[in-house]
Image (cartoon, rainbow, N blue to C red; front, side, top):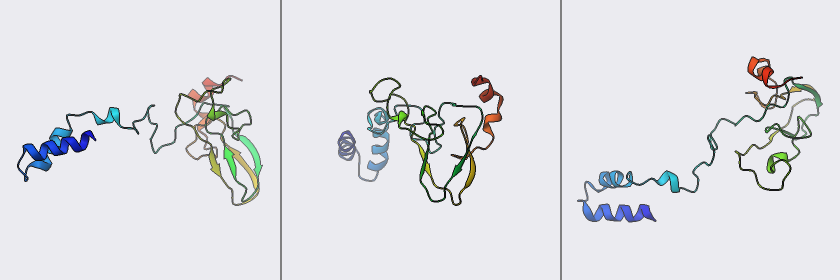
Length: 146
């Protein structure tokens, strides 16, 4: 609504040929980012790069996966059914309140053939849900003591 009023005021103030430029200059005075309903609440909330979850373990999980079955790999790192999702990402730990941290949804996937796979348990992989060796980094090894 404020945008349409700003445009109307610009067209009344300036001649028609300069109105579009004047409208842009006039609108830039307002801070629409703060009032916009899709303004992110958390850093990188709308990033195209997936947010990486909490480190669960410093080694991958070997498991036999069946072809064409849908799996939900835990991306938040807090599931009690690792490496698969149990819905823990929907609530705060120990309460039934909604989370106040960035959304971490499970990664849903299927495999093409039935065989053993290595699934990432450090949750830092760039090849979700499969292990890419990221867990070998010193900083990840240092965070988990076992």
